[in-house]
Length: 439
Ligand SMILES: *Cc1c(COP(=O)(O)O)cnc(C)c1O
Image (cartoon, rainbow, N blue to C red; front, top):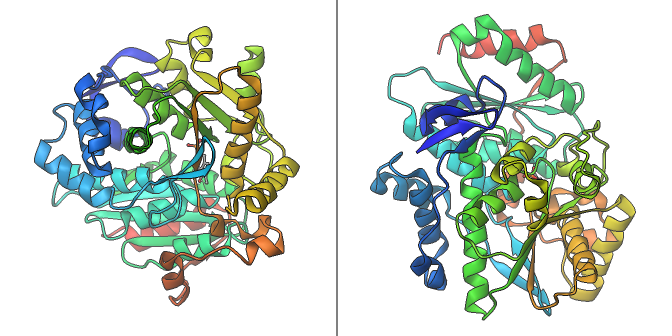
């Protein structure tokens, strides 16, 4: 497999290089040079295959010779060891539940696959790989639980004190082993700034082998294609074949993976991007003007992104042709009030509890049905996280009804391990050098 940069199509690097660099020096994003189309035979019989089987097929076709088949199969069976069921909500509305992994969010797919890919390419006796992550909640948990126990890796997570939910904090702080949590007396932006300074620091880069684990890494994107194919397989078993996917979007990695799957031959009628008031993409689709803005805090805080980092990948997939993109993709935005009303409506009408991100996707599906003359499709909206991760958003009677999954109950008994820190870079640097400098 070869990858180029969205800023330079003449660049050509191999898969391990793209994984460990995360981003090319020219600040573009890595994309596959070839996007092979899956054979028709496979697509036509996809309902016969399980999620790990589909994942293996899709990954082998895309990665080509980057990883031998036996090793790739072992990586996938280990990484993709939880389900992504499609649940019928009502009529032709289906919810694709992506929250059955260890951190209860879809980011588990990306983080678990990436951690195992990095572990696989790390040679023995090499320097330990130091993964630095700043998180506002969901990314940190997925990365912590994804890398937990992966040999030759060490993860340092910075999170803003008092600004993540109790369950998110448990997922960050109860791991031990190779996972270290730092509670920063500041905001998410402060955390991100500290990580950026670390990557730019010469001494740290000399003494440690630093890497990031954010959503621009190509090894996080690839596994997210698996569940789109697998959702299609599940719907085919129910006799449906015309699909519209609705994706709650922040950095647009999830929907970029869906569009990549589409380019690989997944039959989909449309993708609908659903955002909160951080609506850079819906505004662009309406006006043709791409204007990023500072992010605004909302109930669906994992989507509070004013400058979506994966957007260039989507434009690249469509050769920067907005008209071609518009044939496949639509965008809608919703406010916090609308989100809350949707959570209540989904609860009252369907006895289902949707997290705020999921509720926005449901709203976008209803809006899309109103805006299109075509009514003959199965609408699949993605549920990106379990409701228990965002308890503060829910009215009391719904909150009381949220079932806490076993993964979380077992964490509650463990001691919280986090290092408190101020926002000064010197403190963070000293921590890294004294904790890891000799190891
Ligand atoms: C990260 C996240 C999103 C946004 O996904 P992108 O790939 O950044 O668009 C949506 N919902 C939840 C729950 C998330 O954690």
